[in-house]
Image 1 (cartoon, rainbow, N blue to C red):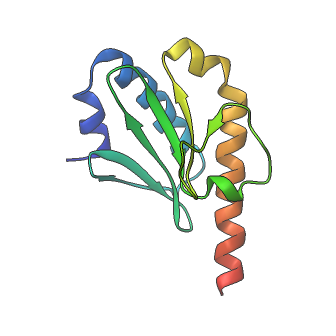
Image 2 (image 1 turned 90 degrees about the vertical axis):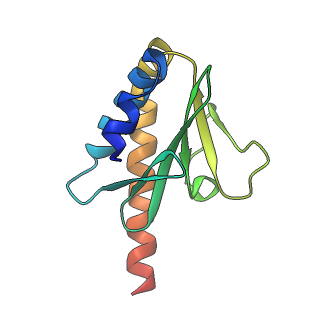
Length: 121
């Protein structure tokens, strides 16, 4: 099953939020790879970048290296995790209100992965 076909099976609220998040992630460039891992859309760009999880009330954009991101964002939460930070949204309107910040955060996460990939070489 593809990420797009998985998203199409979700209830409208989750489908709308996840579709928008996916588009923003794919806008990072042609080298972004997506796959479905444990029924969660997962995205890679120079390593694991982020994944999208959901429950019946919300959708979370989870950053694999969230604790390493250079800026603090008030909407990011650790939820007791040691590396992953996530932003949870309960509706498309709320996501739209944070569009600029989320896109900036995605770019910072991509830049961090690029920096770490160069450092490993």
